[in-house]
Amino acid sequence: MQGITNLVRRAGQYIIKFIVLGTLKINIRGKENISDIPKALIVSNHESYLDVFVLGHPFFKYGLKLRWVISKANYRLWYLKWLYFLWPVIPVNGTVEKIKKAFEKDLWVVIFPEGDQRWCHPVEVSKKRPGRGAAVVALSTGVPIIPVGISGAKKVLPIHSFHLDRHYEITVSVGKPFRYDVVEESKISDDLLNLTIEDMKTKVKSLVEDLS
Image (cartoon, rainbow, N blue to C red; front, side, top):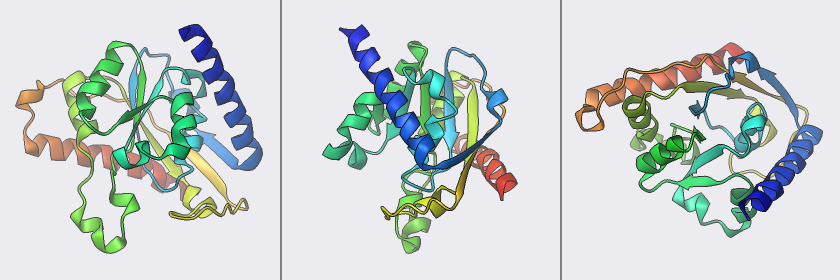
């Protein structure tokens, strides 16, 4: 049964890939940084609803091994259930433990550390904190982290819009994998957590800035 499910998922992923490539202009940089490692944490900026589709493109060969961390609000959207079937997701609820279990199965996990900051009203941004899950996982597991910067997606499909402007090109820049020294989760201080979050954001931001 699992074999049939995987076959259907992979076929669906191929269909989505050809639709995306036929609809959008996507330029991939740094594909040589995607190593054949058994598991990894992919961290990326988040500027459009298109990010999931364009970010999945350079990691397509890992399609059956990818797990996406999403908000509970998005997980409840019934019209996206087909997408969650093709690419299984990890809803934000007990996220750290779920990601660790995914790594035990040699899966790749994609997470957007910006959390809800990108999607709320500009006035509310200062009240939102970046998600800490990525930093906790990175520090407590020592898995390879692959930073990714996406540029142009918000021009093609602005936030809260469903109108595609296909005149623009979307560029995805994949950075070199890195790791943090392993720290027992119970011993991770707030200062270390904040430093790690900022370091991740800086690495992703530098990739985005290199594209502008």
